[in-house]
Image (cartoon, rainbow, N blue to C red; front, side, top):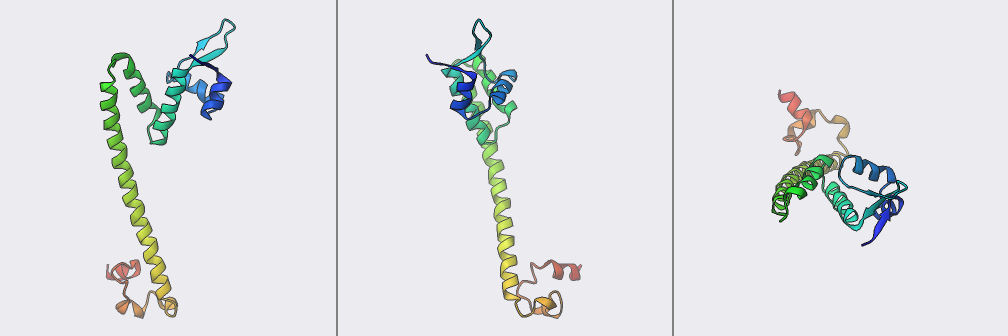
Length: 149
């Protein structure tokens, strides 16, 4: 089995030494110590760090990651962690789909404004004004809605 000094592990994972120490303080990873007190890490820790990075990239918080890691001691088969991960993945997917829906609405709104401004080349100075009655965008226009209120 290969072992890594903290600097080697930092280089291998593209994390800072400070981040690795923080993960250790937070009980996300563990190290062993030489007689001189120098930290060293196993390949298993390297795998855990890659999993932590993966989960963080998927939007997991460190608390969520910590809870999953803690289950290892009481979950020899891995079924409990698998079920927990499935639940959290489903929540993350739902949240991401909602953000996607909001972003698509935002993009649609920007596209609408671009079309509106492009079509109002000659009459832009009169908007809002007399042209509002016949404007093709009056059902979406905030100026028309304010007048109606």
